[in-house]
Length: 613
Image 1 (tube, rainbow, N blue to C red):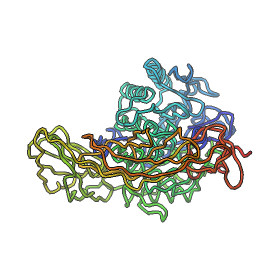
Image 2 (tube, one colour):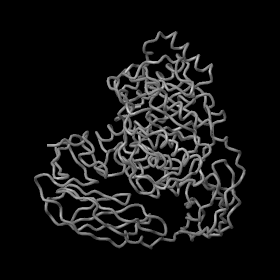
Image 3 (tube, helix red, strand yellow):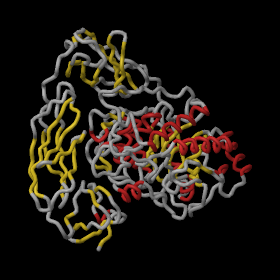
Image 4 (spheres, rainbow, N blue to C red):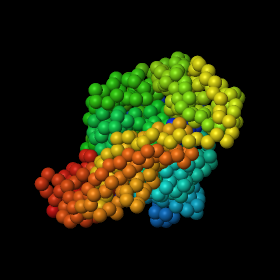
């Protein structure tokens, strides 16, 4: 959790994302993740962070923590060898080791789980080398064994996680800090045993849901930390007990409805949870789809009171969000995409923090414990989804077939599909699949079944027979031209473009933006061209390329860059650097932190980014 030991509030993502500013294809195999063999804490779980320090909220002995909490996250263990050394240390505050161990054991005797949380605002960790990774594994293992913790909570913040340029596939990350963290977590989990060890994560919205709009390894002029937790979550989803995204101290985030959602209300919490319960195309690239987590893997993270962090949400609004997520009582402002009837197995609530909850006379724990306890236990679901329908061929080659179909429906929500052909099968998360490695000039019979959140399989779709092309067949069909090309932002030296994706019989691999003698290659449907001359007219042409190298007709647009000098009018989707000036509402502001602007981040709204002149 983002925390200043000298401050009174836990000023997290909003602070971080505003300082620096603010992955699985639909066609690829989805990991269908069963729950761990041993049930993980209570099904209506209440999780709280306990301060291993006193920041004005008041110190509490572990044994005196409110009995309303099922899981106590001890925060924090922090690096002792610098940001990049990897060695983690932990010393109990206001405790002897013996007394602290006794209190951990006491809580466990009451049926509670006590987990060590690593990181926080003061504990940035970058595992950029294998030696740092090994130091991390050894030191964290030693801490857990010494104090008898039940598991590990990953609360990496700041610049702990980022993506190197070109690291665009969250399923196959290449950035060392990401790859080494994944290996470290799996190694620690294997050491303790999956069924006895709890692995949880508490990322900020910047590192998860922002990945729907921007992905740090593939976008231009955006923060390279955007969506950086996604490869870690994906690679550990089979051992991850729950994900508790911090729905506070956050800038506005675009939901699956492509609208901005701002914190502090039921709308925000439902929209943010729905993204990980439904899955989403990373950077809006339909070929890079982040698959949904199970409902029992998703927790709402909330501040316990107004001192604990920005975006405090009233009890009534929190429970309105839970009604929508658990019971399917839809909001008027946002409709869930993954299931319209709710997720009875939704895990529960997390708060920063136990200490701030006590400071606020236990409003959070008393009110929400009562709500969770009053929920009717979910009955076993035995109703399968409807069978997929309208299975059709999107494209084929000598060695591949791409299929699409109409989505199945289910009372608790469809989690994925299995495509069967011969003795083989593959799992996918969406309603399309690309089957490769086939034999040329051969007939295949495809059937598809849907799976719901309880593991029930639908009846098979009607069989579809497809014959692959003869060997040596060359695709000569180009993609369609990109549609709706438009300028979404411009400055004196840059222009940002967006367009609608092209379609192709075998698949689009990317786009080329040409202007004069220069060009820029991108994989998504947006591009920011920099290094332009002020007050100059440019003509941009965007073409698509498919896997066979065929190039589409071009889409063109002309634009004149802004005049140089003086403050320009503030605009969203613009990359600002320290010292840049912008006008808004008749006033002039100076940029304090480098960032890419977003709607909702207007200068008067974000003093961490802009200083009024």
